[in-house]
Image (cartoon, rainbow over all chains, first blue to last red; front, side, top):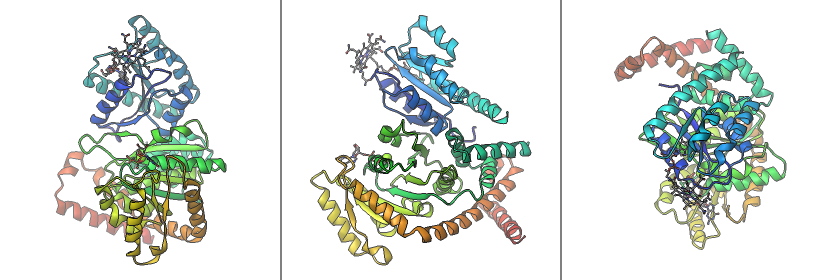
Length: 142
Length: 315
Ligand code: B12
Ligand SMILES: Nc1nc2c(ncn2[C@@H]2O[C@H](COP(=O)(O)OP(=O)(O)OP(=O)(O)O)[C@@H](O)[C@H]2O)c(=O)[nH]1
Ligand SMILES: [Mg+2]
């Protein structure tokens, strides 16, 4: 048991308006007892970083059904610049196989495609939230 | 370990007071979770509170609280006043989880550094929502935010709880909510410093306003003379007037607010002490055993901690 529920930001960056996936995922996480900050599509990177900071989330989940997953390295850099390195980033939606290694190398923690189950998603987010809190604790001590 | 913890919280307190918004985000989580760190942090910040004005907004679901807050924030921002918001959303009674959606209606401010919004779930805290909300508002206060707006869940107890946190309570109603309006009647009569009917762009709004005015006429006591303000968050009608009214009331009650806040803070300190003793008692007991304690046992434990508390207070 964690001291308080996992806090997760579920969002969409860029021009892609497919929001069914992000809504479904937000509901999965809520039903698993987590606190979800949900945004509509079309957010900017700067907004996502600011939200993650103000809401002190453990995990940021981005849904991408167009090509917005290609901005993930920029988001990771922006989180790092804001000293939010401990936050874990996951991506879901339509992410072509051949582009997945690049995202993982850039620091994305997990990728989910169509048909991903609630169990898989919840389990991964739980694990990552624990990781994020441990990483933050370490960062605070130094 | 505990000294290490303390230093960590002292460092956080320092960063918070220096205006680091990441530190504020973190501090809000710490006090919300209400553990030992929360006590250490509150202690590290003792004396840093008391400058901010806190305004509570309550009303039935869908009355337009978030939309109206968004419009009000615009007004204050036009004057250059920084605004912090605590937006409380209901929690799923089944899972304990929540989708916190209030801030999506305040999205227009997402890139404005003069606005800090934090979503809060009405978790089943020990000590209730009020405890956490007050501590969270204190953190925003200590971080230098001069004006703090709290949007509460407009159902159940929270609309009266808000008066324990806020200097001023605004009750928002709207046409077309049917039974919801009935449900908050009692709350409205008791706590509203300002009554607002939102959505006056709708034809049926006048009826709602008249209904409220009729109810107000029956109200006794000091809060009887207040008027019902008609606004539309959607069109902006009446929003500047509402903002002016809030500013005026805050100014007029400034002195009493300070004293009142002090009294509330004392009461809270006492509750916090009780909680601290409760956690000391439970420290030696496993989670399961604690849950399994019979009511009489729990009562005795609480009595013991209260007795301890009064000796400590006298010291
Ligand atoms: C429904 C749909 C639409 C609807 C969208 C409705 C809405 N509000 O969402 C409408 C009709 C509006 C639409 C429009 C368009 N669409 Co469309 N659409 C689809 C379709 C058929 C299904 C998407 C869907 O809703 N799936 C159901 C949800 C629940 O699944 P999901 O999003 O995949 O989510 C799951 C996982 O991926 C994962 N997941 C997703 N996000 C996240 C996030 C996190 C944090 C996590 C952990 C997991 C996770 O978990 C979910 C549960 O398993 C797909 C095809 C497909 N098979 O995916 C095309 C598709 C996505 N659309 C496509 C296109 C091209 C368009 C249009 C550009 C078409 C056009 N020319 O007008 C427009 C653009 C709209 C816009 N503004 O962006 C293409 C995208 C191609 C690409 N990637 O290059 C697809 C792939 C179809 C195709 N094969 O060509 N579309
Ligand atoms: N016509 C009209 N609709 C409005 C107005 N203000 C808000 N709404 C709409 O009312 C609905 C609810 O608005 P919210 O601001 O989410 O209401 P809320 O009171 O914050 O709701 P909860 O947080 O769920 O309790 C939305 O669809 C708004 O667009 C208004 O002035 N006029
Ligand atoms: Mg709301």
